[in-house]
Length: 505
Image 1 (cartoon, rainbow, N blue to C red):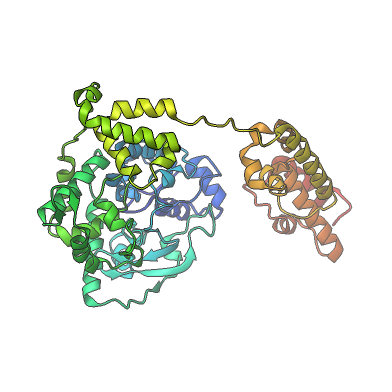
Image 2 (image 1 turned 180 degrees about the vertical axis):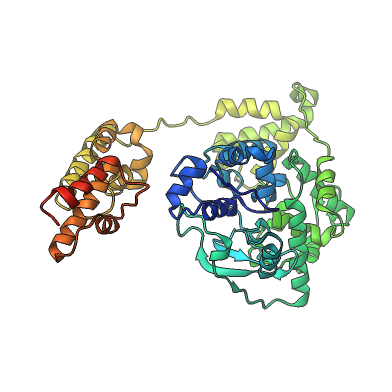
């Protein structure tokens, strides 16, 4: 693509593509996708975009901006990277390089997180003024789209638009063309200072260089040692969660992180326990602000990665080392299993503690015993006759096609459109590999782009003939929504015949 712009500091890929469309005077969103990606189905994603290899190719003449640099300097990926496993970080970057199909958000836990990204555009008016003065135009900065933190690290509270970037899946909106209104703040000065601290700390995380992620084990050790250093431990192993809550609650400024002290599984308790899943950046930053506010994000990450990866090994002959001390526990477990299943035995009073003791001290015997006494799983019955369902859905589809053939207007009857007319579209669309007859019928009766353009032209001609108005080429093209850059040659010939060679004038 000619005249593709070079990204500004902290500019989102979304903003870069929008500016490319303005520079090339492209008004069609699909044509812009064709020019930039060579694919008209790319979704305009503001935080974690994919197809970045195409963007890197557009910038190849600069000698910079490989895929990794684009990910770490022009997307929201760095806000997730330090807090997920290394394997997930690598796979997410590989998906962002090519077609991800929405999997990156799922891998990084964004949809399931209690810290949500706003769907609306946000902007800092002071930053926009600086951008126009320095570069002559404005752009979307990634620092304006921190999840649950609408605050500019430099100037304060952001302005927000009522428009959502999800309103049009394929359209890239330029920064200067979206109107935003200032957000009303009802927070105290102390809370405002805490929000400013979190925003600046988030900026530090965003600016971290590409590096390996700490393991969840290392994060667990880091927070365990943090509690120990600040006297928030009971004995040698237990955490004094009440003391931690007293320190952290005053630092919470976002409603998403409100702690329900009645629940034993609130996020603050969980983050100081063994990490089984990743926590959001805002949860980490809130804890840091209470315990170690003066330490930079890079130093914290370095400290976390310095924690040892401790593993517990169980000797294979552990069951024979201390038979006398273990025999009583084994006898109790046999007694429970004689009465009920293993799963139910663990839920009985004292059953869970007994299972945990045996697992830690007599693991080989426990696993061997449970393997022999586990209940037999029932063979799952085949619930769906896919062959019969295939025939039934195909008959339903043929009836739908026959009904549509009697109607000339309407949107394009694509494969997805026809699928949505069927009962239970969600499950059918995911099981087409089990429905060969339906798939064949869909491919046979779906409306091609050529057929859709021809039908739109026919609708325009009928409408013009009813009103008796003129039928010049440009009038028919406008009525049928057929722009010059997308009209097919056969349709162009048909349009010429309608306007010159037919009886219609």
